Length: 483
Image 1: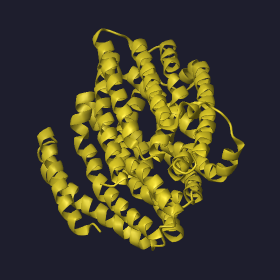
Image 2: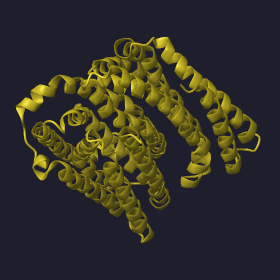
Image 3: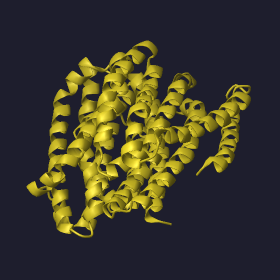
Image 4: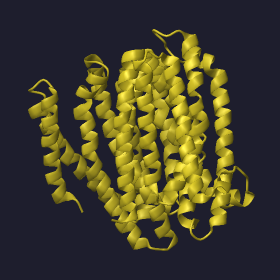
């Protein structure tokens, strides 16, 4: 098995395990602490994700690309790159943590709609969780180093162990009668422990000297253009990725924020299979591009695109078929029905995102990130007003629908440019490929839902049988369609 596909396997298995482990803590937090506490924890995750990803500034993609290309030939340069990135991210993290800590009462008063928790308690919970803002970017940096070296078994092992420790700690605290303060303290502490593990393993790979923050102007000058495009793309992406949750958090009760954010997290975790493939592909494609291996790049692109389109669609279908029993167990039946349609729309939107992921990764590998950054900048003009209107009209269902709107725009604007400027293939061939996959899925899973799930009143056994029947039909069709 090639290193590329080993890394894909590590990422898929690792992030899938983290997803399953995450269900455990959610069940206990919701049942023991209530909907408001659950909503506050997930609101903080959204807030931290928005701020830190907005300030990522494109450095992580640069790190993956440069480490993949130069770690063997110019180790001194790679050390300077890591030290420069470390100084930026630890500095930004410290400022963000202080800002959230000081602004917590105002955030709670002006933004969050509470029902059962008083504002003072909510503000204290947000302050404890502000630790995540400090360590999020440095941890992402160390993870990018593993990706650049194509050693993704390392970050996934740490993620799985850290998630297991965090969830077991939450269970122990709540079973022994601990309150929300103790739970969020443990969440913050376990995040610090996982970042420490990342730091130690990164130091073993690159040396402790590389972990000491510093600044080197030659590193900045060498990467400023590429990093600038990736930084703009990162900022725009996080606005597009989190804007729906921010609108929901402002217009709807905090419990709905928790429900919708958790449903989004489930679908995002499933889409980590796609992220896993693109993370593994970027250093591989970048290396081939540096060597001038155009034809092997295109062959690899086609294999990865087929792997994503036919491989991850059954995973998104599993989220839809499993939504009612899963959410019914974690929350209650009413919440499960509330989240069914949003989950289906999120799954469709994230599948559409998956289909553009490999073309986007290819464009970054060949040094054309401006295609994606320009496309997403234009998407802001369409998606942000559309999201606001959809949330006002349809609540969390409208928020989920905004994801479909966003990716329809990328289909129409970004994909033709990548096909023409990077892949040198007709855009209609790309559309035809995706159309075949979606058509097959609609027939296979739609028929199974209508013929098995609906007549049996959506029982768990019937949903499982319908999913298995639909997956079998999809697999048979894929056998004949895959390139």
